[in-house]
Length: 261
Image (cartoon, rainbow, N blue to C red; front, side):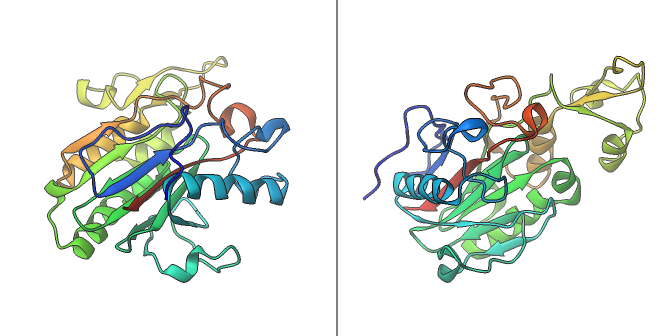
């Protein structure tokens, strides 16, 4: 029986009675200091017992066993196995996963990167979409794996974009634009300027502000997913509510999680 999410956490507003999903904020945990209070990251020097308890609370709120991926900013997608939910399980490195087993949930950790949750008729999925993963096709790969597992079309999939660093705060260099096939110029065209806004840094060096949710939405629509929601929260600009690696460096991790009910 699910305990339900903490009142401060984010819950997708979509039509998917077959799934339960949420994204945590900093509220509702037991960690202290820079990790206060709901840090789920096990590799950020927080107390292991606190991380374990925080993860337990998220799993209880969702009413599921959760698999936390060893994320590497790539584009690999795993189909979850029940044994991977064990605390000492050796889960393969990946940045996305799908589940077709009720009660076996996907858990995506972030601290500025964009988490994307997917609900299909008979499967769920989650993806860790920083700019590297986005450019490398992590969302397209997740949609393909989800549709194959659920025997459905992309148009039947709903996608929810969680909290990430927002377009006013995400400063990037020319390499990021190049990774998305955009020529790094100051005078970008109307369509490209919705994704990248030219803004030199204080030293006058060329920099742009990248819009992760818009980049993700563009990729998802191109993959045939048109039922999109979320993507309106900025982790960087709300320090009391969200962890942000860019803002703090010594930072906890949030989690977006989903399971078949």
